[in-house]
Length: 324
Picture 1: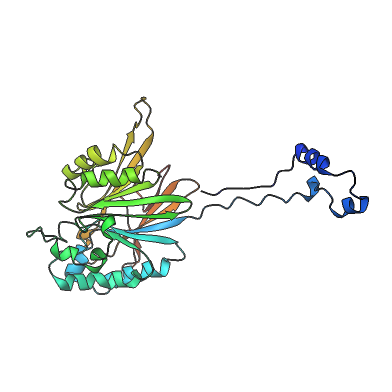
Picture 2 (picture 1 turned 180 degrees about the vertical axis):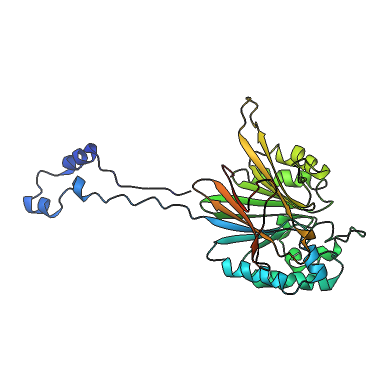
């Protein structure tokens, strides 16, 4: 939020100054301290326009880390690092399934070919997918041991990283990133609602591994999160998810005060190109326009140097209006 302060000289100001002039003051002294005139009033400065910024969203990179396509993860990370200034990238987020099996160190090594490119310059915010905790084991121990997870302050995490939050300010708006990993959604509901209420003046972006299907219907986890977390909190505006192929979107108009008129629209987006094999390397760029309150979305692979079609919007780039 930017505050414009301009000088304003009124008739009352001149009258007040005249009354303060002492009759014994010499003419010379009066001439040395002339009253301001309208022409001397400083011109107001232009209101600065909030600067657009971006968030890079990664989703379901599991197949790339499993098959280790040559340089795909490295290409993704290098593109993010190189675009940091030009795209004003403020965060990299991931909606789970970074690897195919979280208990195989080699796969994390492949993932780090991407992560290491930007980790020192751009904050990273991720939640666990079902593959990150071992599809069969369903055990968080390996995931929670990851340095980017174990270093999260306790106050910003639930159960040491099963659910997490972070805040940042960009374009004059305060944002809350809040997410719960696979099989942690239900247990962290009370915690998430508490965080959302503590940050009610922040625009909330939620991350879940599973939330909607390609046809816009809710998954079982998604329906629970919508009913118990999204709907009760007026600051939630955007929900990101993966898990199922390939891309989709959902728009929910919510009446927060019960007057019969909707007060906000919550946009949910899904994207997951895990089955594209060597046609991989997709990342999604969300560009926020603070003036229009819109988000422009495009999906691109630095590995294939191609843009990718969104199944809901039927285009490679689209804009979400009144999105935050």
